Image 1 (cartoon, chains in turn cyan, red):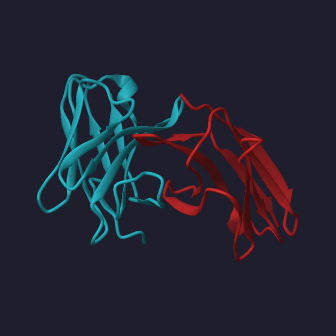
Image 2: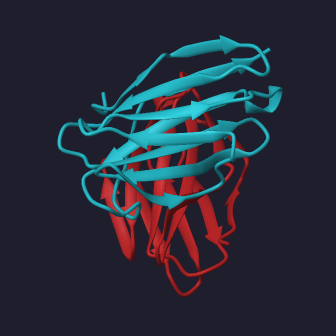
Image 3: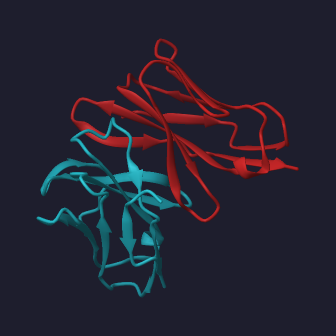
Length: 114
Length: 110
């Protein structure tokens, strides 16, 4: 158990809908990273937050957004969903500001868009 | 943008065999991570390397910065080592995400 929690575990929705994925980092960790894992693209970095502020952006679509709250939990919002958004979404956390350091991964949220 | 290549894509071996998984990357990095993903989907960080070699139990990871290459070795492999092994490069310089290889799907047969 990494200490990182994600909810929900599974999510099934329809095209055009909007969903919110939630992540709680390990106690004491200030950075949260979001990743998408799809069959064709593999794992891709989406975005990083550190202590409430956006720190780095990867291949995140404009339809997707994220935020980190004062209690350090983070939410990833996916809107106008398309079939291709079906994937596993992971969050990870670590103590410092850098993705260079060991990251602790949550169990993931499996999103299915029908 | 860093390109990360892994080989082999798939590997089936017998219990007890010595396993090597390779990872190469195209541009300089600040760190290289090895991750393990089990059939249930969970991801565990195995190693973070910036130089040299690290060992944890039966797992050994090495990196050659000049050659832009890293290897993950498993000694005395066991069926419970069956998983997908993923290498990921951290390029640094403000681009703080990881760039991932496609993974090596390892099956250890009893």
